[in-house]
Amino acid sequence: MNRTEKAAVIEKIKAAAGKSSIAVVADFKGMTVEEMTRLRVKLREAGGELLVVKNTLARIAFKGGPHEVIKDNFRENCAIALGSTEPVALAKTMADFARTSKTLALRHASLDGKFLDSGQIEALARLPGRRELLARTLGTMNAVPTNFVSLFANIVRGMLYALKAIEEKKAA
Image (cartoon, rainbow, N blue to C red; front, side, top):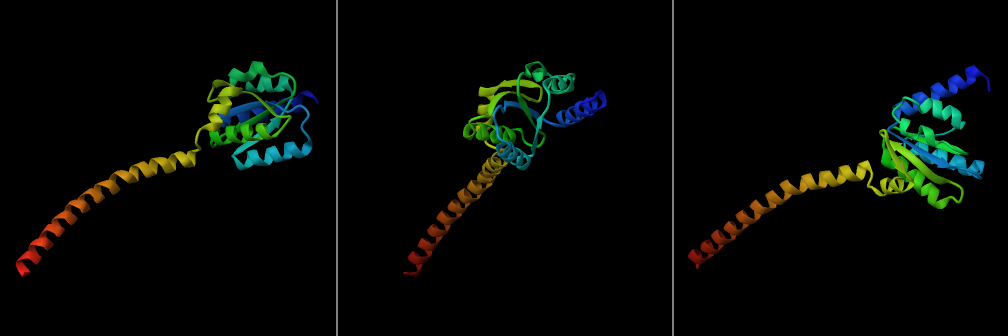
């Protein structure tokens, strides 16, 4: 690889890392092509991408960017998963794949510039996703007016029962 090709790779990594909110670094030593392809497909579905580059190029590309905290930790075989839409979904995808794969191991990550070790990545993966959090919030917001309406309906219903009882008493 000549200098211009290396510069192009560095710029590609810089652009991808600049747009991403999370960068997860994993060890993929011994992974088959089929496993790597499955991981790439799952990451694309989660709104991310997987890059495999030389450590020196990754260090240069991450220098001065939002994920600079991980630039000094590139050693041996590294795969970098970058995601811009939903960090929890990317962390879940990587953690789930690492649990089922014998060869993929999570090393560390950067979430909006904060360093995360493998345990913290697992903790992030256990969090509910964006859709689930929105559904819970909507359910909570919907419960207040629903309970309020139900409370007033019960008051009116009790008053109607009392009026009905008075009407039946006067009719008899």
